[in-house]
Length: 270
Image (cartoon, rainbow, N blue to C red; front, side):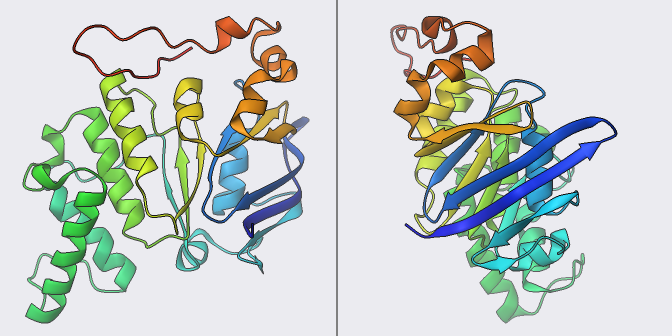
């Protein structure tokens, strides 16, 4: 299995605090790789180092074998790295389709304007918008203003915007944050059905959602990699349970209650 993303000895400090401490991470092409850890583990800082929002104090980041350690966010995006953020950032007065069309035009290098595009380019953009809305589960929401959407639907629009960049690597920062159980279940289905050529690296605190999605898991603790492995191995490792709870009470860490009548079985926040 080929590595799409790798970082070696990656570190970043804020004063005396080592937020990311000599982290080695490998994300293989085609995987759904989860990055988990208790609060303060360094997950968000590591994600910012990977996207270029922060510069490391030391270490390297490679994407597809190319050193991107000193490249800007824009240049990393052009190389196939795309992301969604924990906080939704959209144009609320515009429709879902209009938000996605802006992202498509920006990625294609076109102008962002209220003036109608030429007929040929517009048809191409419209086709791509339709495909993205379908991939993000929003085909029946295209004419609604973003302000009329639920929180979960707005997160789906963010997913469509990220996919508009035609990523090789998609980074998701807590995609399930603030979602209802039904919205989390919908998100799980969407990510599971993304094209296989899109590799996904995601941070998530909902561990049941993590283990429903991930093919590989890395656990961070106090800025360092505690463990990387298959989901089953991570789930059963006492070091992971100790890092989260200060105890090895596995039943307290992973809980999935039986579904009630007429409702889908969905993961719950531990």
